[in-house]
Image (cartoon, rainbow, N blue to C red; front, side, top):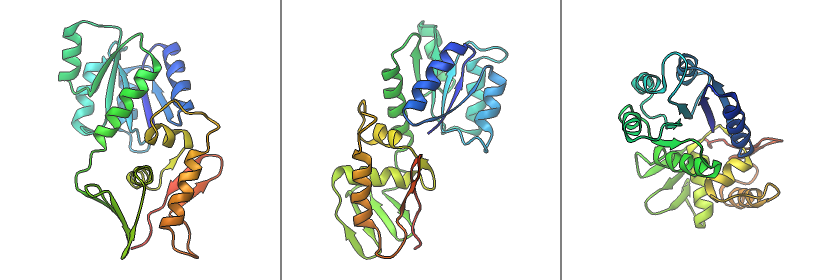
Length: 227
C-alpha cells in the first residue's frame, strides 16, 4: 500500500517510514500541508492511505483534510497529533478523519488501526468480485473460473480476495502476510509462497500463464485472466 505521511517532525517521519517499509508499504512524505495536499491529489502518486498531523506549517491538518475530502472522499485518513483534548478529536472527526491517534503511540497500534481502516474502505459495494472469467462470491465464500467451481479454504479465499481487490499491483510478501494473517510476522516465513502455490494449482489453466505472477525480489502481482 502506498502511504503518504504529512508530518513536519523529521524524526517521526523517519520512524514511520522505516516501520511501514518493513511491513511492505511504500512511503512518500511531505513536511507541510500544501505539499501534502498536492501529493494526495496527484494521480501519479497513487496514494492509498494518509497519516496526517494536525499541527503543520502553512495550512494545518484540519484544512488539508477538508480540501482533500472534496476530491477524494474515500481515501482513508488517520490523524496524528500531540493534542489529546476532546475538542481537537471532535474537530478532526468532523473534518472527515477516519480515525485519530495521539502521540506518542505504539507502532503496532498504528498498524492495527491502519488495517482496520483499510478493511473498512475495502468493504464490498457488491456481493461479487469479477476479473475476466474468475469470480468470487463474497456472501457464499465461493469461487469460480468459467464453469468450474473452485473449492478454497478460508485462508485461500481471503488471499484470493485480497489479490482481486488489488489487480496489477505488486504486493510484497510482508504486506500480504500483514493483511491476511494479521500478526507479527517472521520475515523468514514462507507461508505466503505456500498459499500462492495452493491458489495457482487451483486457479490456473494448464499451459497458460498464472493469474498470480512472481515479481522477482518484490513479491506477487495478480493479473486478471481474460474472460
